[in-house]
Amino acid sequence: MTNQLKTFSRTLCILLFMLAVSPSMYAHFKVFSVKGDVMVKQSGKTEKAVEGADISPAAIIIIPDGGSVEILDTRDSKTYKSTTPGQHSPSNIIFEARKQSVGTVSAVNRNLKIGRSGSSTDRDQVVYLAKGKVTRTLENYDPASDTLQIDNEMLGRFVARQLSRPESVNRQQFPVAIDSKQTPDGVLQLSVRNTLAFPVYFNVLKIDSSDPAAPVRLSEIGQPVGCYVLLPNQVTTRIQLADIDPDSRHFVVMAHYYFEVDRMLDAVNEARDSQSDAPLDLPVYLHAL
Image (tube, rainbow, N blue to C red):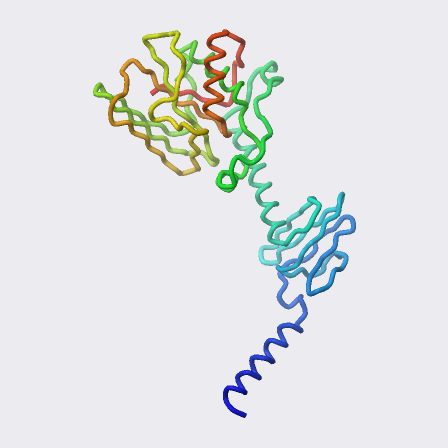
C-alpha cells in the first residue's frame, strides 16, 4: 500500500469516527427546563426536548406557541431562556437573552441615574414611546435603543419651557463631563465625555438672543440627522472654526434615549408660539455653551 493510500485510509477512518460519534461528545449546551412541546432537531433526528439532554451548537430548537425553553451553557454554567415561537439555534437564544438582559438593566440604570419625571401630573403624560429598530447598527450600539425613544413632542415642549426661563438652563447638574469655548472671531468648540455606565443622546441647538421671536434652530456644531450617540468612556469634540454669529446662544439638549432633532425642533417652536403647557420635570438636561 502506497503512502498516499495509507494517508487516505487514515483520514477516511477519522471522518467516519467523527460522523458516528455521539452528539454528547461535542455538545456544550443542555436543556435546563422546558415548557410545552419544544422539539430539538439535530443529527438528522427531531425529538422532544427533555431536561438534561445534550444540545449541539448546530442544533435547531423549535418552540411552539405558548412554549418556552431554557438552555444551560456548560462553559459558564449560565442559563438562557426563550419564549419566542419559531426555530432557534442555541447561540441565537443566548444572544437574544443577553440583549434583553442588557437592555432591561440599562433602562433601569438610566432612569435611576439621570432621573424621572417628578410630579404626579407629569407621570401621567407620555415620556417614552415604543418604537421599531432605527437601524441595525444603532441596535448593536445600544441594545436598549431598540425598544424605546423619548417622545419628541414632549421633549420639545420641555425645552421650550426651559428656554422661557433662561436662569433654569444651567441650574441642573449636567450628568456628563462637558467643556465648551466660543471666541469673538467666530470659533465655537464643544467637547463631551460620557462618564455614565450607559449611552447618552444629545444635540446642539441655537437661538438668536437679539430676536426673542426668532425660531430655535440647529447649531453649526449640531447633528442634522437624529442626534449624537455617545457610549460610556467615549469623548466627542465638534469645532466650528469660523462664522459663528456672536448673537447666537448655543445649548446642548441631552436625554438617555434616542430622539429626532427635526421633530423635536418643530415641537419646540410650536410650543414657543402657542405658549402651551409643558412638563415641569423630565430626565432631560440643557446646558448653555
